Image 1: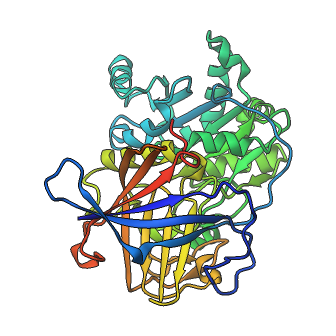
Image 2: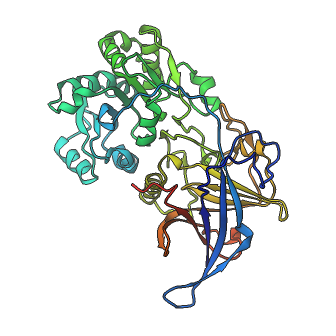
Image 3: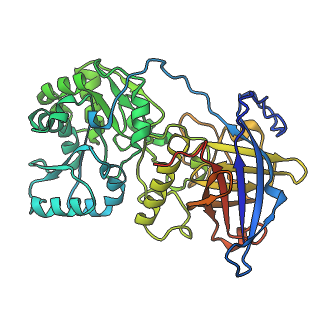
Length: 447
């Protein structure tokens, strides 16, 4: 037996009051009201159309939880063909991180460059064939530099040279250069949306610092951490390429991203423009709490599978399945991916939290609005977060994780359901392992 939660969205356009009818304590944020939430269980009685029984405990109204962020109102329109991506790797690691690369680099019209150490790459044609088999058409180049971190610094010059020498006419219109690690996962539509705030004709050094306090205490906050992604506008990329000889004086620094930071801030005199949509992800362990914290405009992730995994080990069996689930969720919900909706049940003393495309959680206590605005600390002990307050890990919580998309056609409309699954028997509520959250296609954006 499994449950179905149906979320139908109001079309009246009226503004909701502050958690009106939900009664979340201490709320001062504007919210969007969602109405007509009801739950059904499906009973498998061997018939072609299973019986649907209403399950009232998850029903009633849910409200959107929004996080306020100050955005530049200037809008500049860019296309994916105007971004030039580059990263360096080796022949062993590329096979370990291929699903992270494939997540973004298999998109049509991507311009990307992959740099290998010359002695490591025995056959460029074999590597081209391997990448092509994954749907990736990145250009391959080699470097004589053995140390990975120094090759990272050289990405700027090689990417610039490659872009201006390309016979592809569309490469001539490049406005942005994006540098990351071989395990950086780019969320391309969110990246384009984020870049709308910035004018590519000016010198812009864009990215974010680490989210781990220990990392920034050790390495500093002056530079964009490379795993979360480094973005340079076209004029700045040109200046950096022209000054690369001077920039090599920083080759002794720990990371290539630090070298780039020193080059741009000290030689070119351009400071970092921080944007919280870039995620370095330096914490280790279970990151459920972070994914359920209200991330908006997710541009990048890093260290997936080496430091942390997005789902419990019971939910997925390998990186390929995990990345396929994340890609399906992101393609389905797009800019609504990871948006949160909440319901407080005062009678049963429970909080219901839906994180779009990621999870549905039932917490056996009432969370205040202030608590919901904090990150649940689910990762390993003693690793402090930067820029966000945390709260202790919930000890009495049941979570279903995203499993797939199903469609359902009625006489009046076509609905799309997001299926969430819990494989931990001891955590199951009402003895069902799978729930389906039905959304009208008013909210859902299918790609």
